[in-house]
Length: 282
Figure 1 (cartoon, rainbow, N blue to C red):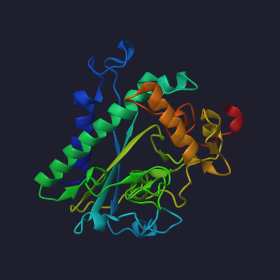
Figure 2 (figure 1 turned 180 degrees about the vertical axis):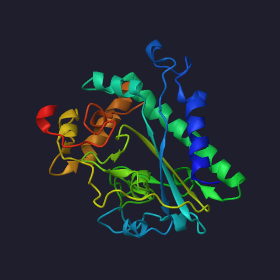
Figure 3 (figure 1 turned 90 degrees about the horizontal axis):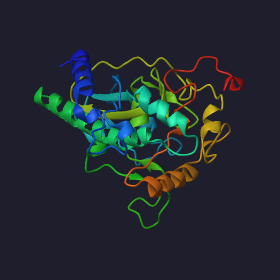
């Protein structure tokens, strides 16, 4: 199996799987029945021993709790990352309401993540069938993530973090750089979701077309204006506590679904890398 094979089978899965479309049985309303959630994915590739994975253990980056690819899979050679851009219908829906997540976005956030998990499982099985042991870190029993500091939790020293980061892995794999809202800006923008697989198959790394972790962010302030609860600032980036509290509020309003995504839609980096954007163009 090579990169071309992997991208082909992933793209076919995204295009043809019924799970990438909102069925009548799960639709919030008739207006979203049949809605396509994701468009064709883009891929990034990194070697398991890339020095960035060691750097992520620094307290100022992620922390010592971050597990590098070799700690997830000792004989691993590559990290595969993919970004699934939301369909135009999902993005347009979330531009419509300024305060709350749209029905389209709620499906993208929840059913979209279910679909990503299925895609990861499918690609993992294809790699294993080809003779290469592989794992999906976020679906592994060792994976954990945390919100606010909690002395009663298994990891009381950590907050708003996890022991594997899809966004950081995608950064290493050449998919893009971070924005003020902490989302990843890719060649297809940041309005979408990310998945990753660690494998023993060697795949040559994708060249990173950037050096700085925020290189693609123009600091235009568009996401600052879009945030309904003022959780983002140009000087300090995103306040995770304010953001998390609002997402909790959306769960109470829309449970079992939740989400927001206002910082990812109606902004210059929604669907591409912003070029010479000025705040007065909003």
